[in-house]
Image (cartoon, rainbow, N blue to C red; front, side, top):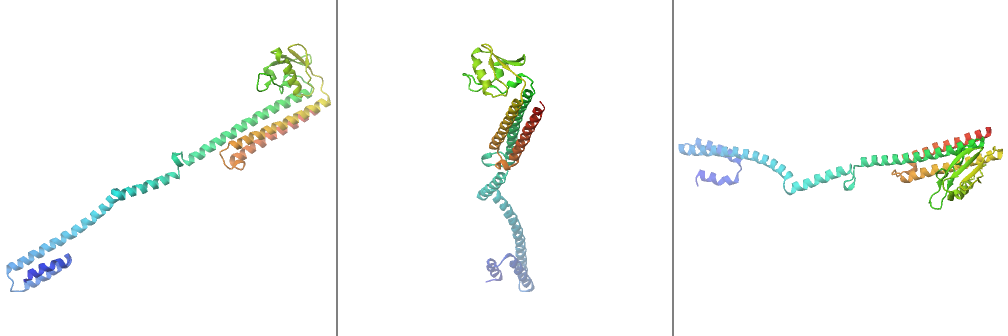
Length: 303
């Protein structure tokens, strides 16, 4: 076998780098041997140059292969089964991140839910405050009328507490809705709009248990209520009446607080922010009721 044939047979067993080295060595040996002809030397040199170019192309091809591998990696991340899995994981991560800011089933953000709850509870407390204010306002009128009566002054407002229950009505009606009240000759005069309601009005005035108030029938449509100078017993009765009505006002205040606590979204109830606010309102208006009772006693003591 010739040298060239042995060289060709060895090609499959050696790599590109080793091949280049062996070609260079063989080229040196061949050129140094005088027995080789010039065409043989040219053949070896041409083969050596060809293998050198082949090695360069191989190296360049490897570099491109690495770039292609990198690109292929990017493609794998955005296409095919792996990309769908990555997209699913990314979607799940985004969903989990969103769930920390939003409730289930596409509800509004938790922050918005909290704000909405606070707005609702604030409205509940405001409603309770209005109820308590109306209760205290009602009690103020009771105190004023009682003190005026204790001082011997006669006004139609003395009959404001009277409520008349009529057969055709579910709830009791204020006296002013079924009759007119005037002051004349040291007495109160009650004139009903419908003669059929006179007995119901008279019964309602008696049931009100107002100190020093005793109606007398004057005609088919008129009641006369004489008002005498109040005695010490009458003033004591007025004072007791004011105290009883004051206790009734406090019961209404506590009822408004209980209703508010039931309507609150805040789960801490009476110990929470809004529960404390409801209690503060109750204490505040309850103190006003107590102060009105004290003032009424002082005024009646002067009469």
